[in-house]
Image (cartoon, rainbow over all chains, first blue to last red; front, side, top):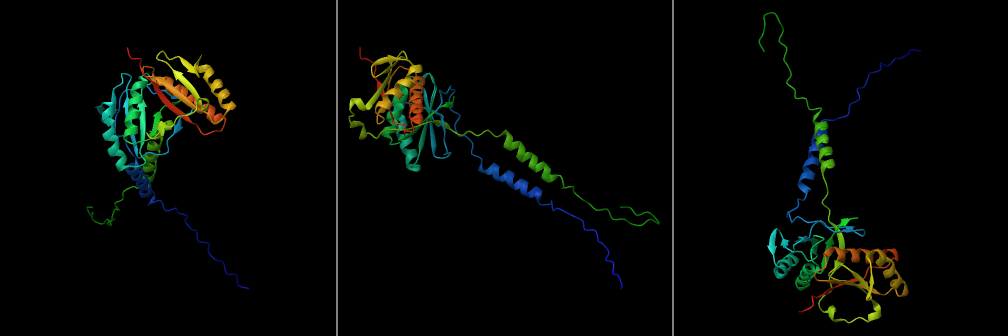
Length: 136
Length: 145
């Protein structure tokens, strides 16, 4: 019986890594493009703390009203009086019906200012509000 | 390549080493992932009442009135209390009747922080009792002199 001996050919095991760099850069570019940067700088404030602080799921369709401890109000980095919030928010809610207004107020601000802001928001029919707080 | 006499011409292959490119790119990704801090907004949600609804008068026994004066003193249904006791007292009132609404009345000159504190406590009680939080906000105007 003739034995046929097959020559074992050594196979080189290779993982194709040439496209790996492309994949990685693609990921980088994807994350760079989808990153949302904060638009307004806001005021220097110290937020109040609350144990029942919830995380907001929404990242778009938010508008912030800032109040510092002296009761100065800014919207989109412009100083405004409480009454001036009405037209601004009316315009914003027309563009984005599910608008949530963030009230970013210093903890030492007087409640009267917040009350005036809430009145203005009611008038602008922007009913969804979040009192921005820090988690305790 | 200069050709030397008698020497064979060996073409040199021009290559760019790309094998470490992937490592560099992944390193960058990892760096950015780690250094990114998410500016996810956090806070207490509240839905303002529509102006028409404001006219609805509630029976007094359906309300738990938490009043905060300009000095930051707290009163619950006209009884003086403290922020430490507020939790238990709201709970007591809610246990009597769990349809009650916490109505936080804050003085115009009181700090915003007090209102948030009271709101936070009320929300905690509702969460403990597994009830949807029902909180109303009101204001105490300065006395006209």
